[in-house]
Image 1 (tube, rainbow, N blue to C red):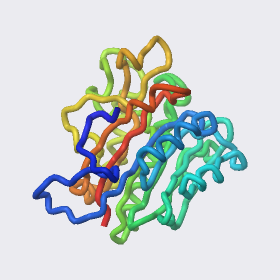
Image 2 (cartoon, rainbow, N blue to C red):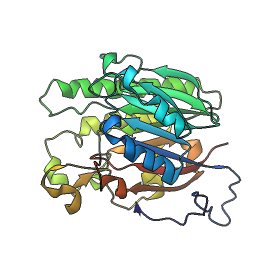
Image 3 (spheres, one colour):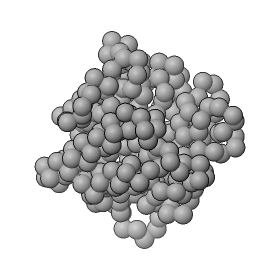
Image 4 (cartoon, rainbow, N blue to C red):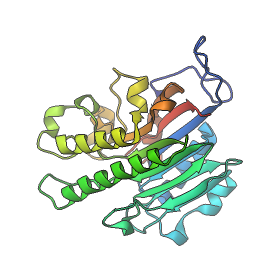
Length: 288
């Protein structure tokens, strides 16, 4: 079930509202933390077949470079750009043929630990796409917390650099940001007082990425008042209780915002056989 629901045409693309004046091709972009691509490959192939997205950002692929399933994705009709670091982290971008990615970049400039493989970029159809997996941070007193803030700071610098050098190229930075942008993006703000994912420094660092890249939170732009989540802990039945967070984001250039057609979270991929603890975020938008 895609939540919130939208009218979708038989080709799997949303109908444009009458009178919007949009004359742009509808592009479906998906971002999903799969929590091990090899373990979740059947579900990823299911998503590709069911939704036929044009561009997909994956996080926490947990593949070595040699073990990344390039052949299986090619058979499904997708070319992959991947930054694979082995047992932990790892990110990828998938492009549905005949889309041909250009100028790939693996790794975030100024990342203190590039071996963790948390950032990759490529350009297609005049848009620079980024898949990123921000460090968790663990706790406010953990050494991983300043590491997380430093990564977010480097991401803001990179977003600003892409924007300044863009020459008309739009930007989409998407992935598991490990930050809930506002209290409405967690099931109970009181639970997160004094914890990561909802602290003011993290939220300020996320806002700096948006400011640097002139980016809009696609989900919140389309649904200013909805409360939906993209992550639920495996433990204690949290998914069925809907005790989650919205930490998987698609940040899009403000120039693309008026072309946003629909946005939703497909909870069905958090259910069933070997689910990830994240659900995919789907964004329909016009590029051109």
